[in-house]
Image 1 (cartoon, rainbow, N blue to C red):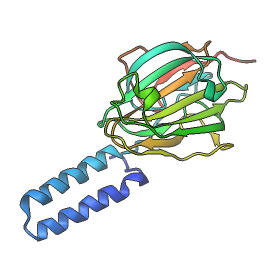
Image 2: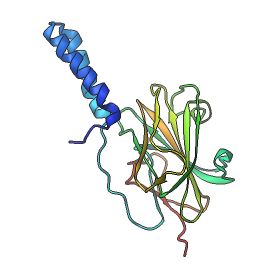
Image 3: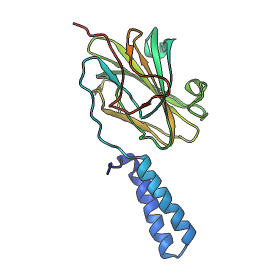
Image 4: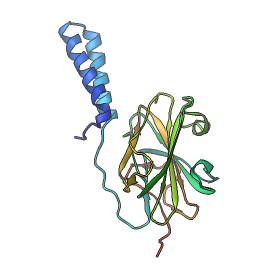
Length: 214
């Protein structure tokens, strides 16, 4: 059975205690509701172990979910990047919501912006929703950016890292509560290995391969 991430402990414990209290009080419909909520939170905040591929140059998915789009784009300028390949991943409430670093590198910047809460599968969500961008630089000075985007239900983005922190590929760096999206920006010469509509797993599924640098 998968463990529950610490961010979810208070939710599971809270609904669990409420279930016991309402059951003892004989409030049948209410304890059943809180029991369902406790089970849902336990499933939502699950944090399974992942096996990170060791192949050189492999970039892994930062999130569980479905690939919404793969496109060549300008920027993001905020990350100090002129052009990139953007891979968008939609996370439903049934996916694992713990986010993982797509590659190893040093965190050079974090940009948080408050915003709205449109459905995360809409294009305008990337520009108008609450979001948090993490920018890393690998050992070859290549920049990779990944943006946590809140969704229609998600109201809380959690980021565990700070500038100058070192992230290893597949390492947990944050999570988003209750349905969301992650946009990944890769160097334009990355060989993409996923397709639109494909289901991916954070820390395990290879999104693409960076060129090998001697």
